[in-house]
Image 1 (tube, rainbow, N blue to C red):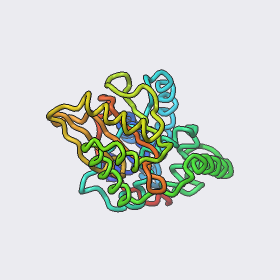
Image 2 (image 1 turned 135 degrees about the vertical axis):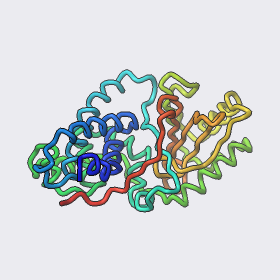
Image 3 (image 1 turned 60 degrees about the horizontal axis):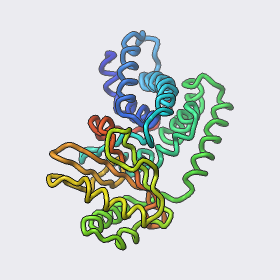
Length: 298
């Protein structure tokens, strides 16, 4: 097997790691391109496992990229949210059922609170099932240290996301009902679907009409959504429910161009968080996820 064939075999997995690390499609693609260039220069006869070797390259590059990205995000206009990924019918079922939650916007936002090393160790262990010996090789640390890093990261994630994850069926029903209530301009119907302390986060990057700060409370969120719909909805616009970041979400298009992608966090049968991406730079390169990671051990 030549370098291109080996890389192509594992590309979906590598993108899954890079995207979850960075929350950016373009940054993930840049990491994969750089990884391939380095892979081509590698002596294949010295590599015991192409998958393990490529995972190591991509993870280290993603850590470096994440450190740089965090500097850029400090001057980002407004709230920063991950770029959306849209799911197609051909997407692997295991990603839908087993790993969809690790693609959700809510999950990726929580990961933003981890350091690059914590994020890498946590994802490799908790999502991609890498053993601690392999993680130690990737991060160039001891196994004991990696265990501590993963535990610390696991505790921080659990602290910020203590509630059970809702089912896709529950999400689909609530999102469809929200769309129906919104189109009917039914404020009370919208409020019934939202948690009393719900939060609406918008990523606009200063390039699209949007709320400048996070909106809190069911009543304010419902009225804001209706106000935006009245002021900025286009006659040729279309709103539909589809899979976004592994969960049911809402996509708005005008003339075939995506203008908004909204994802949700649902807790105890209510919409707790809404994440709307309106920055056109993040929507033009949106793509569906295409990886279903298997165990990386061995």
